[in-house]
Image 1 (cartoon, rainbow, N blue to C red):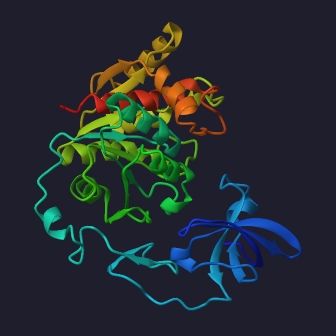
Image 2: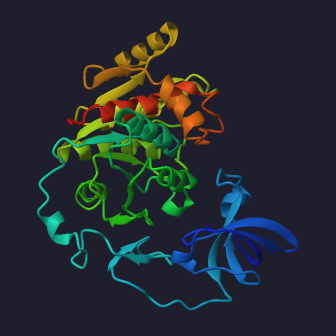
Image 3: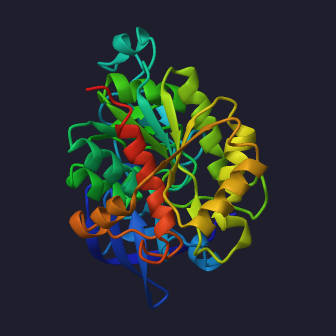
Length: 360
């Protein structure tokens, strides 16, 4: 079910072409809204719009935004450009994209001839907030000599434009290109599924290192299987099939008050122990003895250390660089790197490990 209300656009607070933040009036009250011009066309002050108010009414963590479903003041929009692949299929918002794999794409023939990743390092993360630390770890280790390509899955937010982090990482040279796969859309390149996205990242985006992660907004239910981060195990399997080197980022925290996420999260334990059918490299930051003991006990108990290869790396310097040198403002569940250091250190360690796989 969708909660819908009409509103009037008062101002366009931010306009990035494929993403607009609006101030709207609904029933005499002001509210914030997001508009995606590729879906609903651009909005201007005075436009009468239909808003999806569901998430705000439920109090979900969407930043307090409503979402524009239709613009009554600009109801017509003509198709433009090439492409016949549909995303958000069979919904009112289905949109066509030019997938890199399809015949009209300049990459079609090269992708048909693709034979594998040839041991390209692929970092498999679970949360969008791990992405900045991973990228800093890669680029600091290699002095910004590598092309890092981000593959965004459809496990969370579907429009890449919603991610402030990706925009900033590209501006700061930490990411070279993006690929959106499945029903995610808006990347520099579009792909049909995760497997072909890996090929697109290598062939079309010329990746030295690939990072797989969902967009903002992981889904979780507090149950073993009911979370979208389970895709980490599926990503490891895909990397193995495609001939790459999979490097897993553990979800690690000693600040999360929820027991199921303390030390190594149950998300990581399930994904690596039961979903991943192929071995991978698992990066851990160097920890204080008591914390390291807990983590090893958790990994051993889940059978992960007999299945995957563990690497422990220094990463505090990378977290410091992320905050002080790159001035990236990132949080996880509202916690900063100062409040949840190990979470970000684990991601940075995975990035450093990935960079060390490159043979110069």
